[in-house]
Image (cartoon, rainbow, N blue to C red; front, side, top):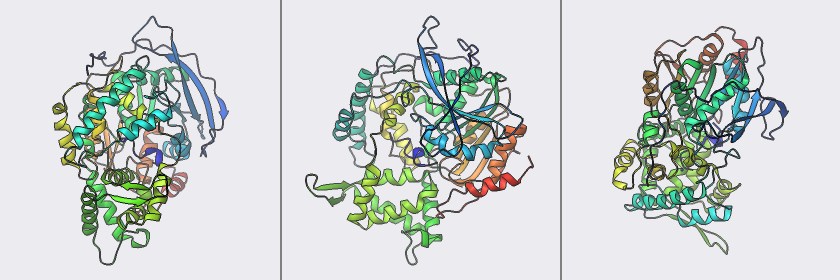
Length: 531
């Protein structure tokens, strides 16, 4: 995915019991009154013509007497082929992003991968953008002060870092709890799942859900499928999150393959020296990888000081900064040549290049998505605690699972552990569910944050679901296109055909070529009429 798909894990006490939801609950989910669509220009370099619409949904699904509504912003790309086969609802993950930029960027690819017979629909989820905007600060100035006073740090940056993270998290939780106490409990995933079904009803088609969810979008898909199993027509889960760990705030499995992705980065670099600034004479992949880890360890005690003119005078490049840069870049192999250039500049202390890199990374408006992510994710979390000792097993397991990424998001676990705004409704049922039609589950061989193991676990939970192994690097199937994977998705949505169990799809691009391979794959799909 593009830059919006990077760093999603980085921008994240007494908790009453959330309302448990039995499977196939449909209360207050009545037929909608339709959606008025009109052409619109998002100004986001759309790859297909866009239409915009709105839909009013209940703010609080647990209160049948409430008349308060929430207006959802929707986007649509019309099918390019006939006959129409209904709409596919898309969610690009997060949580905490609107999905508008992703939808604009990926519309052409998704039309090709789904066959072109479906309208594509996405919506701005509650808690993101302006849809019950979840912000923990009154002004950007307050947000900036907070980030300076309590910066996010990696858990292995020092022997006291985890304690600092825990203390900072208590401050963050208190801040968000005070600012968001009126609407902060209405943004949980169960409510978003109900919103999805409201959209299905308002589309006024066959009343069945067709869905493609990526990353956190798989949590939304898993939850919706578990709550409404009889209304699932087609569902693709791509870049799969383990829902059991997600809802328990015990996510350690997600770092299972992270170090393998860094190893792939180093192997690809050495194999393509003309496109990798880190490739040197006779350096091996294992030597390059060892040098990166050694450099990170040295940064703990010897951070780099970059001189700046007054009034700042200097900038510190530390362990957390470089660790986060590397880990977030592992999501997208099509930018690994850029990561190599940046790492080379940092490791050789090229001050001019480092200043340029920092300026590029820090430019732009303040990021609100981080607070939205915590608002949604943490409101879903169960098992609250006021004791650091209760989350240490999860943190330690994450650290063991991955040297490069395991400590980069300890603050997420810590903040969710003491969250003060539990969702009004939280799915607490099982995921061993039989849906009306089976799901297609896609897992990458080398995914830094949603490992193949999670995809396998989910495919074995939902009855008759089929796992397709996308044999590539990066987060979900998009960063490295595969004709085999795209063709399987197309056959599933158009014909209802699932791939054979054990299917493993090669990708149609190579590491360090700077391409995601989609132009080639879309061209092949246009010429191929076999489903």
